[in-house]
Amino acid sequence: MTKSKLPHLKSKITYPRAFSLLLVITVLSGGCTQEVSRQKVQEISDQQNQQIVQKVEPVDVPIVLAGRYKIKPEKRERFLELANAGLEPTRKEPGNISYSFYEEAGVPNSFIYFEEWQSREALKEHLEQPYIKPLLAEFSDLVDGEADVRVYDVKSLTYGLD
Image (cartoon, rainbow, N blue to C red; front, side, top):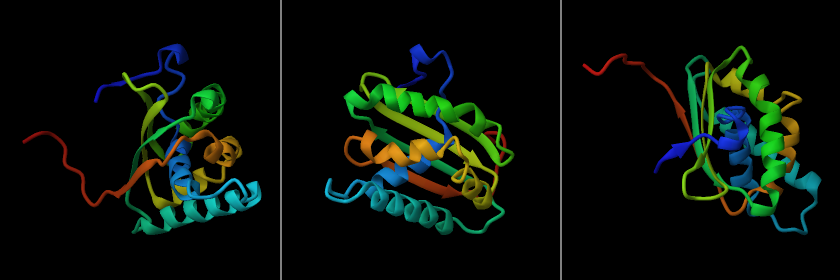
């Protein structure tokens, strides 16, 4: 699979950290029916975020999130608007190591993200930021199907290829 930056965003978006969390929210809230209130969906999303953060132990090791999800074609512009709003502030967060976001080449509206955080606590703080909350609140309405989200805790780092 080839990854390419969104050409029309002019490198504004290289995957906001919020998206991986949003992907998790999407996966968890994807099973909700339309009869469930927006407040209930948000409660489920908040619980899912906490579950993800709590599963990563210990607190002081780096965390890597990677995921993929598809956005409803009619919701694409809204998604990009919300994603762009949180991109730069997320990259400036003290606990953020990297934050990349791509649209999959040849698969319209399929997005791939990769983010690294210094610790579980940094990720937890990120989820509380005001520029991320709008995207989290609307994510279940934007996503088409289920998201594939993976959370990795880094136990050691090796530099070089030797």
